[in-house]
Image (tube, rainbow, N blue to C red; front, side, top):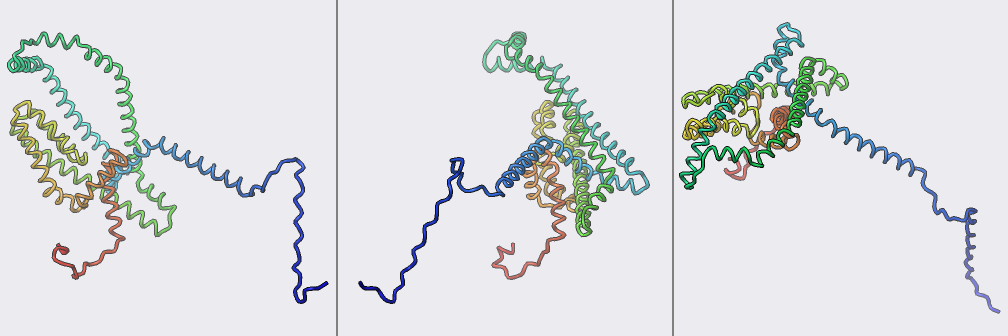
Length: 383
C-alpha cells in the first residue's frame, strides 16, 4: 500500500448533538426579549395619554378661545388702567371703571340700534297694507290679472307652508333661548377673565417670570409690553377711524334726509372698523336699505359715498393714523386676518392684526438688517 506524503488530513468536525426534547411536548421557539413587554406597555400608555390630551383639548377649546379673547381684551384696556393706577387709584377700581365705561358705550350703541330697528319694523308693519296694494296694482297692470289684497291675505293665512313655518318657529324657540343663554354665559366668562387679567396684570407677569431665568424674563417682559402697546394702539386707531367714519356718514345721511341718521352713523363707524375685511360692506348695507325706502336714488348716493370713503380711508386716513400704532403692510394684515379666520374663526380674525403687529415688532428687535448694495442687475431691480 502507498501513502500520500507531505499532506495532512483535515479533521472532520463532530456533529452537534440535538437539543433535548421539551418535556411538555410543544416547541416554543426563541424566547421573547425582556425589554419588549415594557416597551409595549410604555407605547400603550403614551398612546392613551395622547388620546386623553386630544379629548381634553376638544372639550376645552371653547374655554381656551374665551381666555384668548379675554387676554387680548385685557391688553386693550391695559393703557387706560395703567394711567388711572399711576394717579393713585387702586388697580382693581381702575379696571372696574374702565370696564364700566366700555359697557355703557356698548350698551348705548345697541340701545340706539335696537330702537332704530324696532321703530323701522313698526313702520313697516303699519305700512304693509299700502305696500301690498302697490305691489298688487303693479302685478295687475303688468300681467293683466285681477288680484285683490283680501284674496292674497286669505291665501297667505291658509297656506300650508305658513302653518309649517309657524310650527317650526314655535319648536325652535327653546333652541334660540338656549343659544342666547349660552352666548350670555360666554360673554360673562370673557369679561370675568379679562377683568382678572387686567386687574392682576403685574402680579401675573411676576408669576410668569419667576419660573424663567433672568435673560428669558427680559424677553418675556419686552414681548408683553409690545403686545400691550400694539393692542392698545390697534383699539385706539380703530376707535378714532370709527369716529371719523361715523361723522362723515352722519353728515351725508342728514343731508339726504334718511331717518335714524345718528344710529346709522354709529352702526357704520363701529361695524366697518371692528369687523375685519367684510365689515365695510355689512355696515353700508343697512343705510343703503333705509335710504332706498326714502328714494331709490338716495340709495345709489349712499352706496357711492361708502365706496369712495372706503378708498379714502384705505389710502389716506388709515396709513396716517396707524403709522405709529399698528404699522403693518395691508397685504400682511389681510393675510393675517384670513389665516386667523381659518384657524380660529371670528375670534382669530379679530385678534389676528394685533397679534401679527406684536410678532412683527418683537422679531424686528432681533432680526439684523443690512443695507442693500448698489450692485443691482438693472433699474428694474432697484425699482
